Image 1 (cartoon, rainbow, N blue to C red):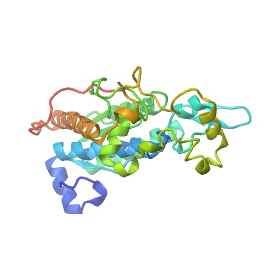
Image 2: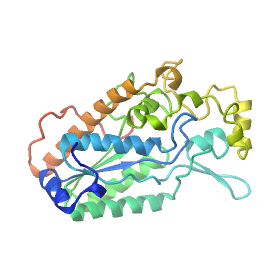
Image 3: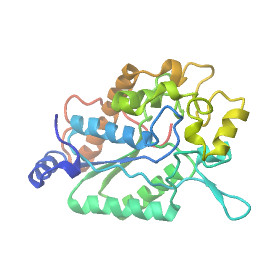
Image 4: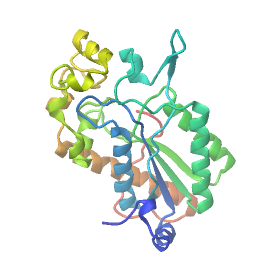
Length: 289
């Protein structure tokens, strides 16, 4: 398979790849609860896999995923605070969630990273966010992108999520449900344990001995799942019944095709080079679904 990870390339491989297609893919994700059934790095893992699959279609290289980011913050009496949508919804620090940094820190980190990519010679920067929070996370990335483009008007830059351009029927706006779980099953099946989905207060209770609020939430809530949003009415997107590696493979292929097409179009706009054959020319809208 074509080598696309920046950190694994020899210098001459990087030079050859950039001569062919000076596209830099940047996957973004967070370390966050995605149910009992998924590894906490789901967002970044899927963003990395999507970027690698897209780069094999369009050319270009993929830098390592960035796991830290801004999100909403809710200050509590006594000086403590909650961060991120899942914690706010559950009213406690959900096990596995640890990614929050201040908005200005996140913004400056992104700007410095993109400046390094620009100076190295990448004409198109494609940022792929696997975390979709509209409160703090995506707005900060967009704000940084606007400032970057204003300062470098000839530079190609775009922010996409892995859901952009995908029909809701295939991949609804969700969290840790059938679509995201399917993607992880296709990418890293060893990081999905569907049999643990509802085991918080049962077979996993001993593991959560030091997390009494988590056990209490599972015991007291009438909700079927903790911190899981299916995005549809009924059970059509439940991870237990709708997640599969086959579904994940279909999603991964469709997402990679669309993002690769956007990347080749972005590069062509800056260089006048034709888009590589085989890419899906259909447009992908910017911003969250």
